[in-house]
View 1 (tube, rainbow, N blue to C red):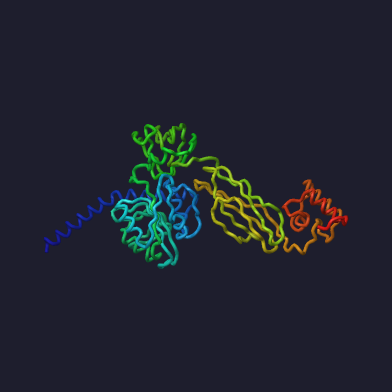
View 2 (cartoon, rainbow, N blue to C red; view 1 turned 60 degrees about the vertical axis):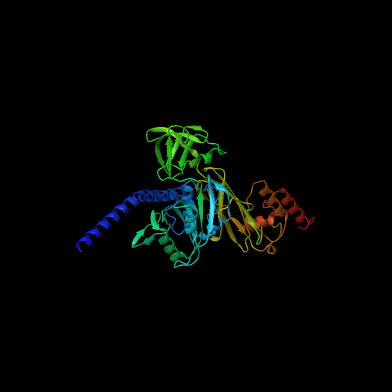
Length: 441
């Protein structure tokens, strides 16, 4: 009995040692996952992604420097996944591979081996939560899944807050999420044909050799998990230090896609492919309506103008309010205008949230537009609202066209004879002709 007890103790000790050895690297990877999630929050300008799994996934990818194209950040996890279905293109040097079906992760490991990085996993409606879900998996290594969820999750009586690096066996991971969210729709695998080591940068010469991007000196933010600062501007040069994700550096000299920086008392070069240039702050300069007043069933068009940010490409999401109550919510797209048709009297206005390619955002509230109701209730040309058209109405319209007077609402609509959203001298002449019984308008 004593020998059996001693044997069991020895086995337990060996297992403990093996477990410690196996998880020595795991802890570093888990810390990196948490740090990347924090970086994603910082880039998005948010304190939490809770309840927005689609946003959390997109921003984690962007924080890793993987997906740099335009994304539709709206919708459920299922819609997010459909965005990538059947897509065969590269982004930031990465190829997009999709695998459908409930067993997609097992199929992924079967096809690509036991060390896989950067996977988006999407689950369908079902399970105890009754909703779709999407999350970013940093790695699947030797049958273990390394990830952070945008919701606080409890496993084995241990609570993992939002964004905490977590590791589960592949089998446990699949069964847990199936119970919570139902079967998987599939997964999206970003691959560039190389192993990405935690302690290094994601430098890859294929990403920048044929790049058309033109870099200039200035401030840049690191988007890689860790970016090497090298002695010379190439990937074979000695590494001097590692710059963490999210840090801002000043680039003083450019050579191809490399920038000269000083970091931690060391001067060297970084690959700028894995950075975003910090330009002037992103701002919306205006959100103007095409007219200050309309009848019911006449469309209003607001146009947004943005400037600054990390690039000249912007994504716009519009909202429309009636009497300060939100009645329309849009999604991010590249269109900088919105047209909305009121169906009843009230004061309408739009607001816009603009996002640049660095995930910086800016908001703006547009001009009020008065919907005065049904057109048949008004006399065209009756600028002063007394029910008849006289020379006085023509004089008011002329003063408005000369910017000597301002009218809005019902009065503006009646004065705007040609319905072009402006009151000009042509309107004033037509009103005068009507008042003189020379023209019926």
